[in-house]
Image (cartoon, rainbow, N blue to C red; front, side):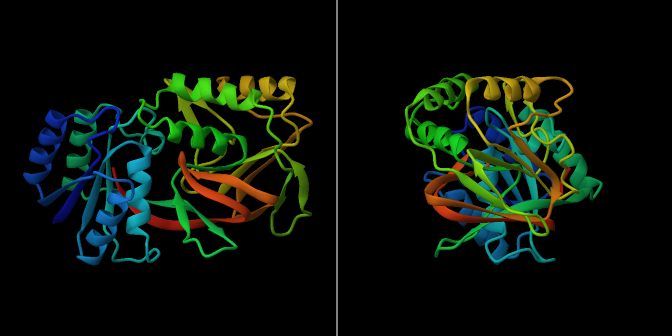
Length: 309
């Protein structure tokens, strides 16, 4: 088996020693090439090249951003039967996709599980989300979430401070700051095939799995019925008044995680939707800012990728 290990050395929980242990362990089972990323988009380019070269497996060792880049590289020409499988060894702070797959957070434990899965030829097909736009931009894939509005503004500010570690505390502080910022947020509209359009929304979250994300060890739930074998979940709010935000935040971090409220628009198992805005608004995929859009088409793609584990 030919494999490529893509390592982000700047990820929160990656170390040179850990990388060497991982590479040595993988090299005992597969013919391995190692790529260390040193610029944004490097992981995407490495994964795309691995797919062109006919690799059997691409292992992402880093955070959610690294995994997202690898996924987008593998799917640069769309899903097909000959794509390499994806392996993940978490190395970031949240590792949402890996945790949703049931992978250990500890890189050593995750490596052992990956090796056992390879030996047992164990993998699973997962559904993914794809973001298209009405402009010339290429489609972007997401593994666990996409967002339009407030959360994308938070991602943009975190990205601006990317010299700092993207810890839960940093995200929380910036989320509060962005909420309090006296900025005008345009009203969004959502159209789901077969339903009447819904307008007047202030933010829209789209989930590919549950939990939507994590704050440290605490899971954040928006669409509890979301999973990698269902279509997408949609969570949107008509107002961002403080009582509404606090109510849904409390529901999101509760053990039950059920979302209810008069200002809430929520759907489960949605095959696709279109989000429009009267002016360009930020969009994020898996915590990675992809720019501003006035029209975003989001689609669930079934059995998009094989994941080892």
